[in-house]
Length: 580
Image 1 (cartoon, one colour):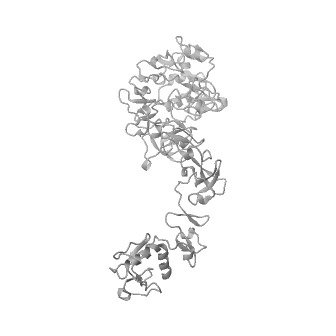
Image 2: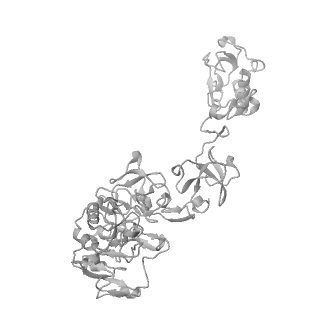
Image 3: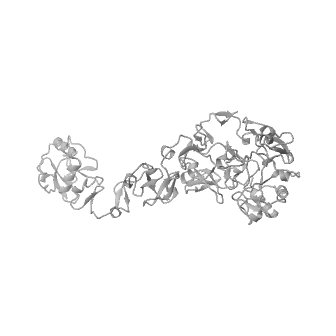
């Protein structure tokens, strides 16, 4: 073994030792034959030191290799040792434990060289382990480099072209590409799903499109995210916007898709911070794909100390401490307007200040929605605050009328039927609605065809069976927010008899109502999460306990006419929050 180690030292750093021997002036009297044993410096010839090279307690006379005048340091993986004599002449370079024992099988007379170790050719890394950062492939028994993800989507011909032992050269629709091993979706990068590979590699992280192409490989500009379903860059969905998958919310995992219990639609929410930290009114939960995300605690997506005080619109959709703000994470900011300032919850790309503190389409404006105005009314055409509700009315509610003792925006009135005429219909002045129009705003083929909700600006979803744009919270107005059943009973039906409508339900955002349903068909005609309620007492209890408001007379008038969809089932308990 002593001879093997000396040979190895010369093989590892031949040029190093050659120059060192010349510099030190030592002779080779001790290298031509087996080194002489020694107990001290006196036992060795000039230019030699007495050193236990092999660490076996048997010291031998060795040529001085290091720590002498003119001698270079030892190569990487070696230390200078003179442990027996502690000679001022210097010492010998011996392995420090990190240097390999071998470089090839030739240096292992009784085995093979595996990752720098001479091992039994039948032994596997399961028994021996691996050196450094390598990991053991338990299937082959071989040590392989640890996976760092840099290889994902690289082209390949076999598994050895890819990262660690659990990673694979997987056949995708775009061809063979490297993928990472996984056990669950949360093990994968954003935009990848853990699926059983078509080869024998077990579960692998593959793109949702099953293709390594487009933005899956190239990435996206700042402010955009990759649609891993088609490989195209698109705008990120802001906090509380409707989503189905994590990648729709951010590309870096700062915002993820959270789906509350009982809901078929998720919303983008901030990811949990260090030690699972989350904004007030939320706690650390799991996203739709099993990642840690801050789930809101109330019945409405809202983050902050006084969420109940917010009624945020699309341009400032996030509630923080009772105020509607622009952003919680960078992905909430429009392209070019980020990043998000965590102190002001405004996008730092905006340099706006009073009296026009809000950025809208590149310009500084006074308001984006009613929460920014003392009067509670923002003209979203000019983005200026108004003291007159009638100043802020616009399509599809461009007219102004007194309803239930309150001025509010309606589709049409006896004085203004222009909107009805524009869509090919006529105005029913009794209900302030257009009849017989040829253009139906709330009809759709995909979610992209649907306008924002007229009530809170949240994205609406397309019901594929009816082709109607449906508000995720169950609201309807029969104009833009439709019902799967096709019929919406608005609060105008109740107010026609003089019943006062609470002012917080009116004011430039449309006339809210309930979806009409047939109890014989169960909940099928209701938006997801709502139940068809016929019993008046039960419906009142549901609405009052869920909403916490005194709407008894309003519900009595409306519910006495027909069954409607409400957020409580036959058991009298259900999703918190009113359907408007």
